[in-house]
Each structure stands twice: as structure tokens, then as C-alpha cells.
Amino acid sequence: MEPTLTSAQARRAALGAQGLAKGRPAAVAAGSVRGVLARLHLLQIDSVNVLSRSHYLPLYSRLGPYDTAIPDRLAGKAPRGMVEYWAHEASYVRPELFADLRAVQRRVWMTAHSMPAGVRDPLSTEIMSLLAGGPPLTAREIAERIGGSSGKPAANWGWNWSASKRILEDLFAAGLLSSAGRTPQFERLYAPTAAVHPAGSAAMEPSDPQEAVLRLTDVAARAHGIATVRCMADYFRLLQRDTAAAVATLVKRGRLRPVRVAGWRAPAYLHAEAVIPRRSSARALLSPFDSMVFERKRLESLFDFRYRLEIYTPPAGRRYGYYVLPFLLGDGFAARVDLKADRTNKALLVQAAHREEGAPAQTAVELAAELRMMADWLGLDDVIVKPSGDLAGALKLAVCRE
Image (cartoon, rainbow, N blue to C red; front, side):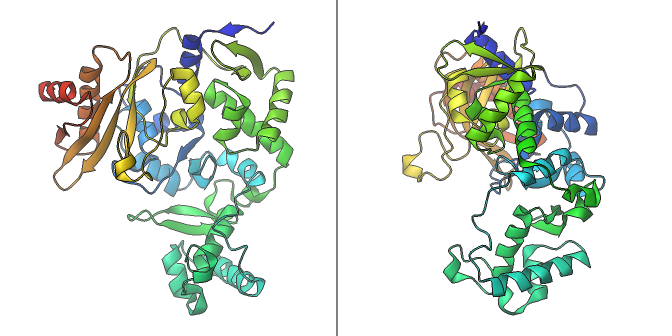
């Protein structure tokens, strides 16, 4: 008979696997950042910079204040500790995962597949030749150097990108091109993958797709601690039917253990390396793109916490705000805050603050301390709480006492 875990045990298993159950280290070095990446396996990238670049925030949530130059070096200087590729979405990933992710890559939207072969093929060859014989370049620089029709808008191809940009995305998705780093404007610097990946040309050796799914499912299960098939598939955007087959194999090999979780309808699996902490001392603001909150149904099942990203919701329809971060306290979510870095006035703006039902009495005080620490890390001098949300008043008082 399958063992049954309480909902509290499942929560702690998940928090432990994500590196959120323990307190933060006293000092942070490159090894600390590598340790978080080894646990999470990926850091999602996003262009929104209203608070901080999204890939910096999961590291902050687990490590506290740290030097963002560390992940920049890991992504931009040899030997690289992380490379860019499609994972959950566009992400920095451990280089060891690249070949497997490439083997299961299914994204074809916003690429050059719809272009006439007579345009696409010669231009692809020209781009590869240009990058093979020179320094990494941005999409704009490549279009300028190639010139001609490659720099003109492709109005009939949906997204109105230049032909060269669409081909670059195609070559990136195919794993032939990678990123050698980012400019200060966060533009990707394209280069041949073999010149960027720490394994060199060996990184281009193909993986067997079935074995790739098996390994990626194991990695996703380890990152989750406890998960359903749906959760494991979502971590790297695998097909659920392929993931289900991989889960069955991993159960036979003893890597996954079927368990029941109180209140869950779907079958759950505990990873062989999962540890269930006795308690969680978490205190962290989580990015909307943090791997802890990837799968919203899992989040709701684990924590009874309904979370939706409202960036693309019209302002009048938003319930909590534009860039809302959940506040994790102990083994549950105690609040959510809509944050913005006002870099001109050097202030961290709390646009709205909402308390969760059953939140601890010390939520405002703990959140105030977390906001003050985040402001310092971002180089901001002040925390300003606007009068929006049922936690705003108490939070403003607590911030003033900090």
C-alpha cells in the first residue's frame, strides 16, 4: 500500500527540494550560486525589469543579498556554469542539460519555418558563416552586417520581425546558435553553440529523445521533491504522455516512490533523494518566474494559494497588481505584494500589499524586514508603501520601524 503524506509534509518536501526551507547563508560566493543552480537546474529569463531581471530573483530568494556579477560571469565567461536555451521557457540552464533539452525541443512558433526556402536557407548559411568567423553579435548587428532584404520587416509573417531575426530564433531553437552573453540593454549576443558551450563541439552530439525525457523527468522530480506527472512534465515543458512513461520507468528503478497526499486527487511521486524537513524557516519574496511557482495548480494543491500573473491583464481587471511577488513565510504563503523599483528616486515601491487568509500575526513585520533587505540589495534607499491592499497599513507602520 502506498504511504500517505500529510499536506504539511508535502509542503515541506517541496520547499526543501527547492532550497527554500532552510535559512540563508551568512556569506554568498560563486559556489553558493552554483549550488542553487544545481538544485533548480534552470533560471527562467524574462524581459520585464520593473523590479529586477527575473533570473536574479530566485537566487536572491534562496541566498539573500549577493553580487549579481556572479551569475553574469557564469553565463558570459568561459568556462560557463550556465547556458541559454529553451527549458520551462527561455532560461539559463546547467550545461549538462543542453543536449537533452535540445532532443525534446518542440517550439516552432516565431521561427523561420514559414519563410520561403529560397530566402531562409541562404540567409541561414550567411548568418552561420558570419558568426563562425567573428565575435558574438546582437540580432541588430547581424541584420546591419548582412544588409539587403534581411533587415526589412517581414510584415506578412505575423510578428513583423526582420527575416534575419526570425532565422536567428530558428537557429537558436535548433541549438546551432547560443548566447555568449547579454548587452547592458539585455540583448542576446549570438554565437555558434560549440564556441559557447563548455563542452565545445561535443555539446552538439545528439541525445536519444526517449532517454532525454527519462533524464529530464528525473531532474524535474528531484527539483520538485514531490510531484504529479503534470508537474514533472511542466518543469521542462515535456509532453505528459512521454513523462508518464518515464515516471513508470523511474518507479521501477526506485528513483520515484508512489505516495498519496492528503487532499490530492492525482497520483503523487516522492523522489528518492527528497528529504522532508521537520520545519521550514523560509522567509522569501518569490519572483513570478520562480520555479517554486511554475505550476499554478500544484501551488494551489500544496499551499491553498491561488496565484496568477496579471502583467498582461488590463489594469482595470487586475486584482493584486502588475508585478506581484508571493511572500513565503514558514511553510506557507502569508502575503503578496506588487513591487516596483523606482530607480530615479532610489525607492522600492510597494504598489499594493495583501494578506493571505490565516497569515501569521508577525507577517507585516517579517515582510517589512524582507523589503528593506531587498531594497538595500537593489541599491535603493527607501521603501515606500502605498495605501492599497488590506496589509498596506500594517506594513507601512512596520517599514517605518525598520
